[in-house]
Image (cartoon, rainbow over all chains, first blue to last red):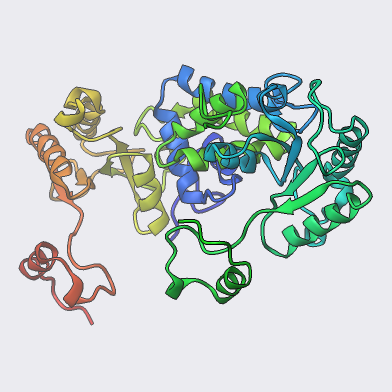
Length: 226
Length: 226
């Protein structure tokens, strides 16, 4: 004996099934959660549901990316790139939009960004040409040609052009590969290239740190600043 | 020093913020997950995103409810109510659409349903008139007037009309209150009213059962059927 909704489908309505399938297609949302969300939306006033879907459609259809750094932006140039008080000679290279938001939330960075839009990952078929690496190279090239002068402010002393690229990619194999590839692409410019400091997190307990992190923390130990 | 996106808002784009807020309004979806989902949708082809939002709009705008049992349905009458092989004199009263799907998935029930659309909950401002209790009463009244004959098949022996109402509501205070209210409303009909069996789940360990469930399981013990 089988239930009415077991076959041909588990759902009492094709409309419900299509909505559940659509919600289920989101990453991390299973069938049960999708059903719960679909039935929640069904209980809301129609205008709330339309507002919900319009916000998503509008994001997808009208989103723009900063023509300089490729960050999501409402205008042609994002607020960071448009800000004359930021250091436009320090370019922090990140994988995605969320990384920019994370770094901005620290309130500790006054340079600008370059969003790669992904990471080199042969297993997922993502090569350097799928990312904004060429845009980064030409952007750095322009900065160096200007002698690092941006918005009329001349470059730093020492390093001609005063340009610094910070490779702020993740510490896994793909991140390291991408960092190395970009490092090689930028080798012909006379700039500094740095990467994020790695070590124990603030408040971390030595006992529970993984060996790789702890080992690197000892090798790359820093002067004690009380 | 604060990041560019800390104020006036955390988001680099108003469109992104509106989409995140919309997704964040779903129950159980926090800000971080909403941002992750919004950026996921942004990476999808536009037609996939439109398909996603259309499925949700279509569910909300075109959904219909069975005119007999108030279950979600593509037509005026749901497949269960339209099925001549179901027992239309046994009406299982449930809180919502998901409960119908859960019971159907057991494959153990051949009667029909009545979806209340909620549960009596004074704290949430939900009274009997917000539910389909009046519809249930008039439905049972009709069944009794017909002498329990449905689709030309006469009622069961014994109980005149052969009508049974199963109160399949949750076991908490609100569920018990709703069950009792419906029981009182149906008292004037000469029908059987039953509720779901409660006891230890199959495979449950005595040691870990809560005292209330274990106590009731002993009091309501059943004949051993090897």
